[in-house]
Length: 132
Image (cartoon, rainbow, N blue to C red):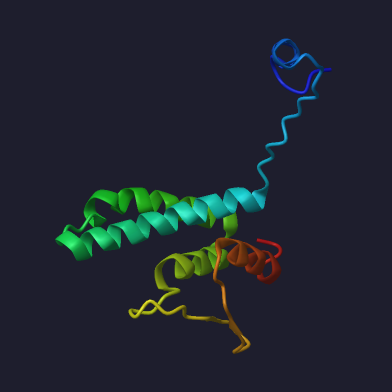
């Protein structure tokens, strides 16, 4: 059985070009973690771009982007839960102080956590809210 559509045609093409048989395997697997990281990184970049535009030109896109952000926030709440959503939004909006220094997240136990990357955030959410 073929792993994906047109595998035989691709094998034939490589055989003609290279003069030998090849094994072709589709190894692109979207894991929950990788999808989460892409989503969070894109939201973070969008937020930073909006802030940079405002600082550079004084243009505030919040009215134009408000409905879109509302939809994204609601989807995040539905999928990840209220507690996880709050931490996600903290990570996007407040993890850096005005001087650009990383602000550690303070847990309910008073312990400080450095959530530097979206992967750190994902792992922390899975550990802290395993049922959400």
